[in-house]
Amino acid sequence: MWVSLAIILIIIVFILFEYRIRKPDQIVLFESAGKVKRRKGRLYPRHLSMAVSATVHSIILKVDADAKGRLPLKVALALTVAASLEHLSALVRVGGWKGDMVIKATHELDVLIQSYVKELSEKYEIEELTSETISQHLQKKLGKTVDTLGLDILSLSVQSIDPVDDEISEAMQQQETSRIMEQTEEAKQNARISATKARIVADEKIALSEHALKLKKLELMKLEEEKEAILDRSRVQEELKRRELQLEFDGREIALVKDNPELMMLSPQLTRLAEASQNLRNARTIVTLSPQDISHGSQILEMLQTFLQNMIKTSAKNPGADRDSKE
Image 1 (cartoon, rainbow, N blue to C red):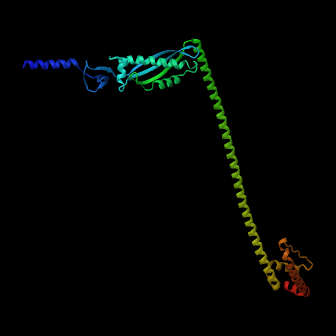
Image 2: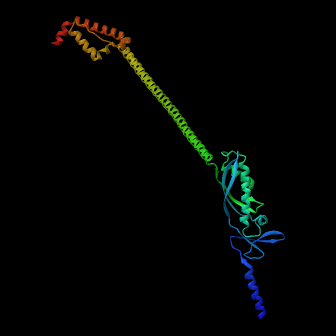
Image 3: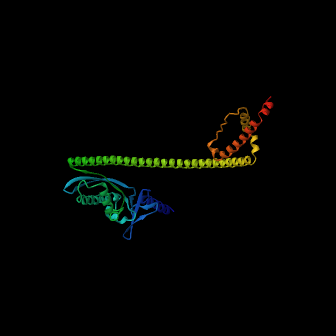
């Protein structure tokens, strides 16, 4: 019994001494059949495994390079990497079977990046080198994963490109300042040109609108004149119809009086005219006819003369009768 308890106690002590709990920020590696694999369980034997940090590593790289013409410059880059779970064997091969294998692999990547930057800088003039050019070159060379180093590149950016010579740096700054000022002036002139074009377009639209308004006014005036002409024509036609009816009525009246001369005595004007002729034997009667009555006034005048002559003859034959009647 005591032997069993001792064996159990030894096993418990061995487990507590050998096995460890994997932390969330760790990658536990082991070797099987010549290949490095990853343990996924929470417990792992520490002497048969290697715990590697799974956190990202960020470093600032300083690269001393030469541009075309042997002009020295300094390039600063920001690099962030992490262990690649798909290329663990390459990571162990580069960084060794140690917990800091990711850091060692990152140093190797630093050397690789410096060689690529120097290779590129020698092909360009110092003013032609830009952050975008270097970043595109490194992405083309390295990609997102460096298979040979067992690392994943999370980010790689160029922070600065500075010439070593201060005079060259100052000259480049002046050149950049001149370029910016030139672009600013060009933008101002373009803005003025755009404003002028916009004003011209606005003036053209205003002129076209005013022209269209004038045409519309003329069209409305024309319509109004046409309506007035139609009304005038209608008035003239009504007046002509009225005159035609008046002439027709006058013609009927003349025809009636011509056929019946005694009807002329019914006219008050003729009655007064007859009385005046009796009182004033030598008086002359003046009858005024309007131009409208000229066409048929001759007939009325003839009838009137005949009627007056008859009355005068009658009054001349019977003067005594007239005095007796007056008395």
